[in-house]
Image 1 (tube, rainbow, N blue to C red):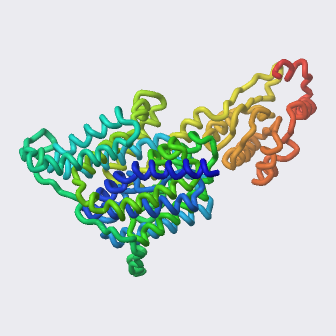
Image 2 (cartoon, helix red, strand yellow):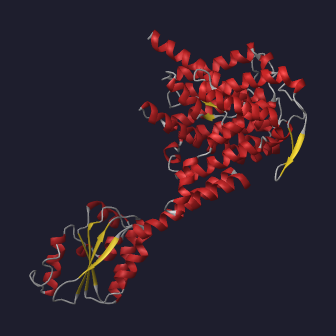
Image 3 (cartoon, one colour):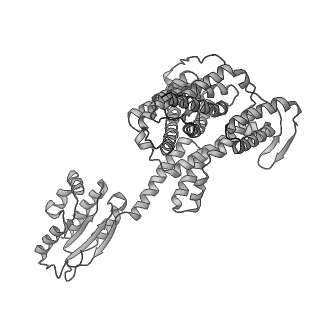
Length: 520
């Protein structure tokens, strides 16, 4: 017991070290000002603690992430920080509602090309938002990136982001007055300054976070519903994707709906205390597990350690240059890019590549929610088209010595995607009896059932009879529930092939040896 607790404490400390520079960087990126560092830190503290306490993914670490930061940036730009915090509280309430309605079971059905395109777009946006800082302090950004990449390769004990934060800040403080203040121009990028000015985070609050109860004017709340839903949906997607990664690593199964409730509580409390919204963070969660964290205790410890960092090391944080944080975010954005998705561009089906590219472009150029919505709809339509081509197979069999009978053998699921093809095939024959052998049809949806009813009507118009054989119990139940069985006639629907054949033989006086023999 003591050993496990000791391991959880050490893991929590390790994750806090990883989370500190990211929390500061995402806070500054979201608000567009040095004062945002404390907002990001508060977000990591409150979302990390309460999402772990009430969530459904053991050892998952929550905090500010790329997708959430991009959304909050747009909300702050339009409504200001105070109302963005209100939107964060509302987003938390929506997430709690999602969990209570058990919507977590469905979010995982978002297609992978859409997720890849969305994450790639987020990565591009994160880098783009740092361009102003890069333009005024390119040299510091480059130095930070180099330190982070080299330390990640050669120093395994300390996270590369923390090494870059400490070393980059130290170098700027020591060598800042001696760094060259020169500029140059590049095509497409315009004028860049190796070092135009060194802007620091500046003083941050070192006391305990205070509860803020902002005004809840009805007209403002109505305007904030849309951005709040955006934060809630994207935060839920981000968190549950991380939960799946955690399942693969730990071998355990997360509770999606409980996780959404935990995320909602964390975001609601974070907004009330002036913190950024958060979501399950993959890198921090993986570090937690690999460091020995197995329960919510390690994630909660990580939040407590961050609070102690703020109280004890506030004076150091104030000396961190914004260009150092920009360098960390550039590396973070590059690492977020899903390079595996580029293989989709050269592979089949091309529909996946189209969904990924469209989602990525819309994420960057339009809006995140629009991108995800269009991506999901497009993927669904392309999937339906593909399934209509690969759905139920229809084979026309010949019945020897009897032209009064036409037999079709169906194999595979009978659903809306293949209804029109089945209707076209069957209704063009003029035989006295049209037999559909459904022995290999195990699934039928409402559209498929209605299609059989329509086929029966069209066959009857030609003074023919539709016979269904090999109808499984679940298929028959669907036909009966939708009143299609009455339209076809229950006396023409048989659960076995033999009974259907016997019925037709009696009506047509067809002997097995000259009629159906050899077909099955």
